[in-house]
Amino acid sequence: MSTFTGQLPDKKRLFKSPFLSYFITPTPPIPLEKLTQILVCYSPNFVCYRNLNGTTPSQIRPFLEKVKELNSSPILHYRNWVPALLPFIDGIHLPSIADPQLVDRFHFYNKIVIASTHTLEEVKKFKNADFITFSPIFDSKGRKGVGVEVLEEVAQLHPRVIGLGGITSLEKLQLLQQSPAIGFASIRYFLR
Image (cartoon, rainbow, N blue to C red):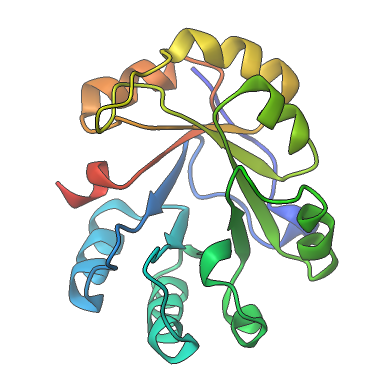
């Protein structure tokens, strides 16, 4: 079973559990009442605000404040990034197509950087990110999963890999926990 014993960058805060949990919001984002229920029920380590339809800082800020209030780390998807939100986030989630130099930019601001990856080349590209997600692990929305076995190779390239994709049940989560992944990320697992 994988465990993570480190701390967030610059010793910001210890992780709450040995296997990280990362809730990525759907598009459009869920109401604050539903977010509160999820945070109370699951206590994810990270919560990513992701709205692929775009939004304004005034719409995002209450979400980020609620996440922080309930002791999770608010992460902002890069597509929703605006400098005015910098004080309200603990980190940024970069898409796989992002310039890897953005990792250093956000480290300059003392922010956690999580990067999406789907291939070994992308894993190498984001070697300086604090964490990477690798997906899809299981079949997800018409995409064929690569299986937990591939995480052996991924973890040799980046030690802080978070499995993502098709994690919709406790059984799949338990399979992932037997891999070198240090955690899991999901949308649907948290919405059940």
